[in-house]
Image 1 (cartoon, rainbow, N blue to C red):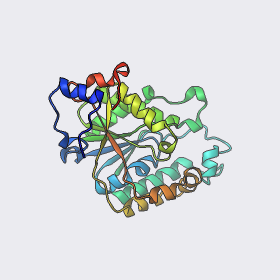
Image 2 (cartoon, rainbow, N blue to C red; image 1 turned 135 degrees about the vertical axis):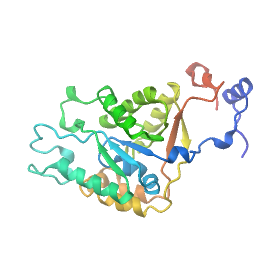
Image 3 (cartoon, rainbow, N blue to C red; image 1 turned 60 degrees about the vertical axis):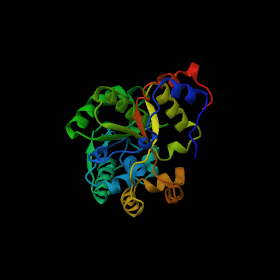
Image 4 (cartoon, rainbow, N blue to C red; image 1 turned 180 degrees about the vertical axis):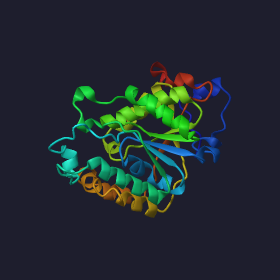
Length: 275
């Protein structure tokens, strides 16, 4: 395979030392020592990163939206009804038990931040990234991760808030390696993932595909997912989840980092040319 050279790439290569491409897309062993996956809901981390977590026991999953609405909705929300919950069920207790069981299968530790997800709140009270950022930052500083993985924040307001909060924390935090993972289900919506990648690129945070070592055997991931008994039927109904999980496709991760020195102008929309 030859090196790609288009107009924009050629300009970059003539204004900066040619980089060593052998390290692109790879994570170092030091970066993989203490992984933290930031999850919007009690299942998203295992859906998006389950095979990565299976190969890295001892990792921590920080879930943002785990709070109990006061008062609880009566009748239950359409999603909770689709998941089989009734008016007298403690939905959050059941879902926390599922999450604890799933992460135990993977040898991972849960951290629940306690924010209330949007389905339980009127529009004017939805939680945004600003509201989450300080708590998320304090949690990450206490965990001292070597790498943080966050969702792209696609479609669902809770996913958007989680991503936005993580980007705020990244700007303050700096030290660990940062990666995005693909929000399983939502990333199949045409154009959404491409739009998220483009937005990051144009903001100066270059998302670059990263080969993070994951368990080649999906068995442990699948055992962990089976613990989310309330969620799987609804996810299957909405997304055809089983067929997508069974496809021989690897989990995809994207490193978030500045551009190589001398390449910054490639992020200028006015200067974009053919790749």
